[in-house]
Image (cartoon, rainbow, N blue to C red; front, side):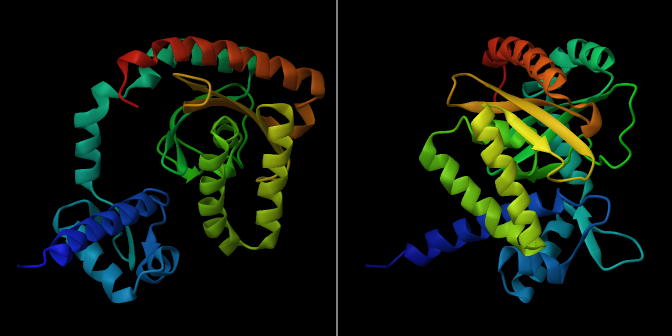
Length: 262
């Protein structure tokens, strides 16, 4: 009898590796990735990464940035996103309220969703205060452990799922040095203690942020709302007021989730 194990396992492994590469390509769309860096980040052999990226390029899911040896997402990724958008456009129903919230607080309001071990920014509304150092835009993908919104989702997860995600995040974050690992752990501990995401210039000097998750149930976070501001303006009283505002909006979003496929 023929053994079909190899025939069934290899294609699945290739799909997972390809999906991993697509996720990574989505994290540096402006600067792109070198093949060497992709190989290091994925722990795959350089030749395997080269082969998979070439395949993605043939399907227009990846492109080489002109004049460089760096790779980013291709036009097919955008086209597929457009096709899926009507089922996931949570930002459309929240736009007016979150625009008003940004105007009220004069800070930056973010709407993000959970995507595996990462968070993806799907909405950003700027108040009057400019934070030039804050580079998170719509489409930015980051490990959950690296933002107030992401940590707000993490602390709501069941313990086993939370531990697994943090370990995966830290495996990647550790490549950035011990100082970054210590800062991320500090932010998580502080957030867990307060019951909401609380970034106290742990990621960017001089900038603080608070985040609140939303979901269908308490322990099933779908996304998060967060506000970033200058740390000097994030007094304890103001921070609590911002958290209260976010919780009000998060509760309203939670009531609307039934119509989306997140």
